[in-house]
Length: 264
Image (cartoon, rainbow, N blue to C red; front, top):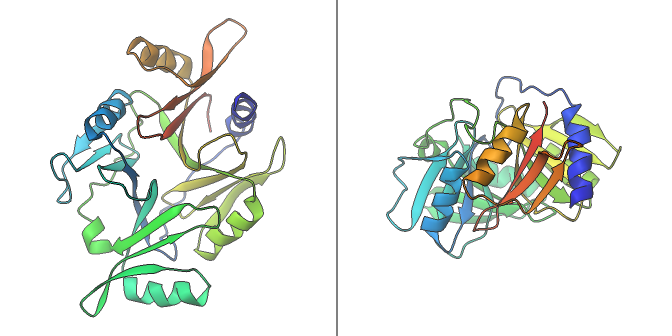
């Protein structure tokens, strides 16, 4: 994992990246990440220490569902044995999307509600779960205001570990995502976006399938603060002066946060 951290730091620190105005992809507008947990209180406490705060939504239920935001990303914690993590999108036409996905050979599981579909569930070639719901229902989720996470800095991408970047890239492109940056040095990576979320495909076995990536020029101070608060990295890289420049943190539910010093 340390080799991967060094490579990502070198690649992404040198990457100039900015999102264009949001243009919904084929599957609609990105809304949030749904994460399953067996201990809602422990997971929620962990995310709060990482800079997330609860936001009220109609779907939240005491002891079973809670939604949090850090100003850039929205996470819904679900106390249930369900697939996780899941990227959730809102679509204007779920029924039409079902037919469109079938035409591009995406296998979809659908829940029916009346004459239409309540939600669509499918996975990427490397097993990333996606959920599409009617945009009217996802509009109840507060939109991030873009303020950097007070603890972690600027959220730059959702990083996906894959050994088949080309296959995974082609699948996301079929959904309407466009390539913002791609290279094979020091390893094959590809950043894609729909204008509202960045999906980073990284050719590496050592990271979880989905991780939150953050950058900040003062990240070493942020990491030191998190450690003083009792947050223990699962991996870190020290600079020549002995201070930690980059660190990985893992939540109780297994979600990885990758914190890097620099600009992306």
